[in-house]
Image (cartoon, one colour):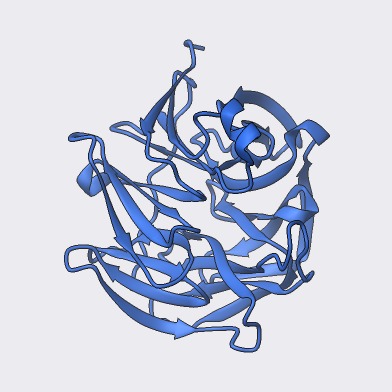
Length: 301
């Protein structure tokens, strides 16, 4: 394995950087800052960052096949036209849960957008339990609820053969696997089984991606690391220590998808902790991992 290198690509601090997505068409990294209510794009050629503000906390962003993006903002699915910064609402959910918002999301191999909700904290460390759900937005935009009674819907991805759906509900402190029907887009909830339970020092699982060898990479929030898991054996096979504690998500990108991009956050750190973590909230690039990822799927609607 070559020598691992971690560098900062976006020094502007993100309150809650999340959901990095490699935009191959523009050689760019798209990501969100949830708490700053903006969608951002870092151009790998010019090194410039452009951001589009939205009207609520934005949980995730995904590429749209016809151009632009599909996002989750507040409790809504919406299309984002990057050029004119126009937001077109698709559907608003969970009107009966005003304290909920969407969190992480990703597109499946057939172009369906999966995204889940969570309850916001009412005080530090205090939130209503089991208020979230996982939804699918298919190309026809007829939303389907897949999983209920979720705490913090987070990392998600599919096995290389598309027959398994990997999912993180962060407060379970574990990665779970479900049987998946890629033709119908349905998750078999009865098939749920644990893949990996995080160790104490790994803290809370957050965003997740998969590599070309079928191994999972999980960002560890408050754990300051990204870990690589073998879903077949349930073993951790690699740990990459990061220069910030609140690591939120990861994805592969670059010309040959051999680079890993990692988001982080600074919200929740007091002045003393921020002084010890001057790179908290930055966006990082890791090279030298010795593995590659796969391109992101496009939303087909």
